Amino acid sequence: MKRESFDAVVLGAGSAGLAHALRAARHGAKVALVDPGALGGTCVNVGCVPKKAMWIAAERVGEHALAASAGFGTPPAGLDWPAWIARREAYIARIHESYSRRLDEAGIACVAEAGRFVGARMIDTVTRRLEGRHVIIATGARPRRPSVPGADLGIDSNGFFGLRALPRRVAIAGGGYIAVELSGILRALGAEVELVVRGQRLLDGFDDEVAEVLATRLQAHGIGIVHGREIAAVERAGANRLNLRFDDGARRDDIDVLLWATGRRPNSEGLGLDAGGVAVDARGHVRVDEWQDTNVAGVHALGDITGRLALTPVATASARCLADRLFGGKPNAKLDYANVPTVVFFTEPLGSVGLSEREARARFGDVVSVHRTRFTPMRHRLVDVDRPTFMKLVCAGTDERVVGIHMIGHAVDEILQGFAVAVKLGARKADLDATVAIHPTSAEELVLMR
Image 1 (cartoon, rainbow, N blue to C red):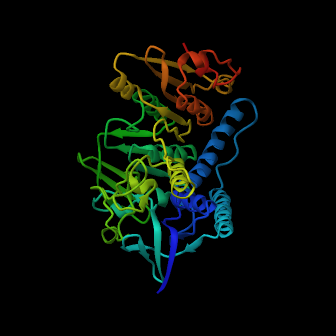
Image 2 (image 1 turned 180 degrees about the vertical axis):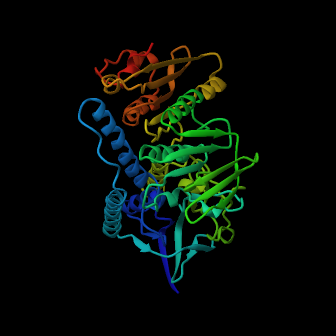
Image 3 (image 1 turned 135 degrees about the vertical axis):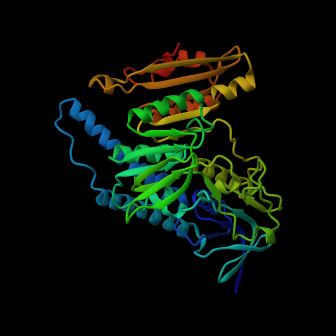
């Protein structure tokens, strides 16, 4: 077995692993990147990128419908699914090529094999033994399915990207952002969709009010929502049909596709973490402190494997901070996990940054003020489409510092980024009020809110 030493041995070539490897190499570190899978991990291959591609296709359906309402003729035929998937896969292939080129230019040793700890900061693959001054665990997470009879008859979010035709009737188990996003895409493209939600609301962790608005929008788009119910068993009903049995005895028959969106589990099995002495929590997430350090000196963890804010930009940002601290001469570099913006790409995107109203009241008590507005954007008003935008500011203190912004509606995904900077910098409501509006836009409503 070939034995080599590196400044950094990175397990996982997803968003976190790639970002760390490339930044560390830029700082002059000798780096090995270990992963048997496709470059880019979940985000590039079965996550953000192909999801956004399908969302763009779904968005075009809505654009055509608006155009028809405005007098531009009838909408075209439905999506040519195979042709669009070919475009999507070609786009992903270009990302792979770009990563390969950058890794090669950076002089990073890419090991396309699975790696596991055989000691502190020592990793074995099939053909190599890699010793690292630092070892970075960035192996991500994967979809989780419940342990019910017939669960394997359904697909998960990875399987969604394997679909080669639009299913007629879909049941989605889950009420989180993956369930919401995929329900919107499938419905916009023409499928009948029903969400089966264990709890009594969608999007736990998001602001209550914006989650309620979202639920209303799903139903307005024809997406069914069943709360307080779980799937107890899945049965095959012919070559391409499924029947569902629920925990309360009810049934749903004649389903083309069941999609499990019931959470994710960390990819920590098979890494030999015990041999490396690395501690994990009860769910298998690698325990880290605010510096991304594990309990073992020189061993660090990044991204979804840590269970902290499972978002690609968070994984990337934390990875670069760690590389700057370990190899770039910046001993205080670490990610600030407060006020991270995020967007749920439903048909009308939902954007959020900062504290929900409930969180703000728990932290600041009576000195919380809330400002909200509902309006119909000009693009919808012109064609008499009832699709209002909802915006909400959560402020705290006598100076009304903006501690949360929550929105749902057209283009809020693009609007939020700039306002997230303002929240990060501690902007006050008065600062928004003093900013001249850009008219006519939807974004102006955030600086005109009373």
